[in-house]
Length: 237
Image 1 (cartoon, rainbow, N blue to C red):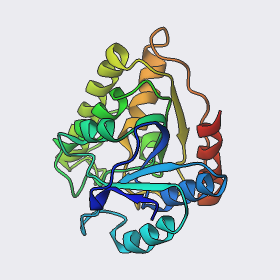
Image 2 (tube, rainbow, N blue to C red):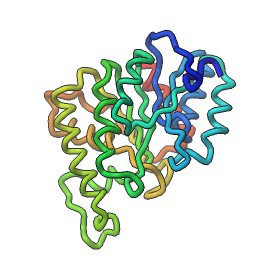
Image 3 (cartoon, rainbow, N blue to C red):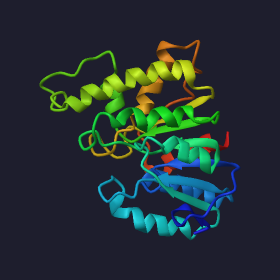
């Protein structure tokens, strides 16, 4: 591995692409494509055995670490100091947000910290990817139906409330350009972590067009390879 921050090594603070969820399927493939093109990449992910990519984390970390230019920081984005730790390590040239959240396994209080500080932390463009169809079927203005099994879980209702708070925060405090990529069929409905900030950004763009830039486009139903290549394209434009 070129520089592994798990061992206390420092990366010279300079603009680099930042990929959250870098040990997931989408995040790792996006990192590989950038590294193969000669870019340095800074990746963060949660190494908690209970996190979504845990089954493949060691294998993917070893594979990425064999490529020159890869830097890794083990980090749970729900941690209160997550944004500060990233800011201390690098200046993001672009943020590719491929990290997700499993709301049925996480406390609702985690939702704000997943997206809020990350989206405020730099004047870098932010590309958000969602591997779940949920953003398409649960817009904020539609209440969850009681007969919907998800509607009976209080985490879903608090998820929508957290999105609303994030929309307002983005409108007032995020200084940079926002670019989104929607990948609703990447994993299949209900089978992936839910990347809620994407939905919030869609809502923000539609509610506050004078404050936030328009969406740069949504990609619907992409296989993983095409999705990763699209994120690389966003990173380089």
